[in-house]
Image (tube, rainbow, N blue to C red; front, side):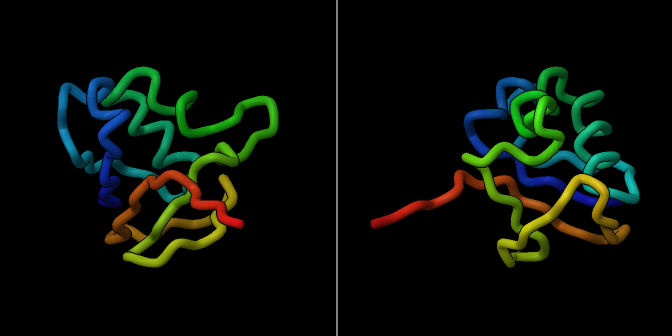
Length: 89
């Protein structure tokens, strides 16, 4: 099952856990499954009006920050991490 490293700001939603393992074949399915384990998780990660990951967040898959759309397939053994997006100037 895909694993998600839960950022510290979202850990209270997950009873303090720093990682959840949930089923899902797409990013959307994985995030929705995480919401079942951690109510409120989905709306904190996904901009439901825009139907995409919130602009202030980035998703790292297997250690590499990548652009993932909600319909993107996720491997059964994927490790996802949600991190604040970094902007600079």
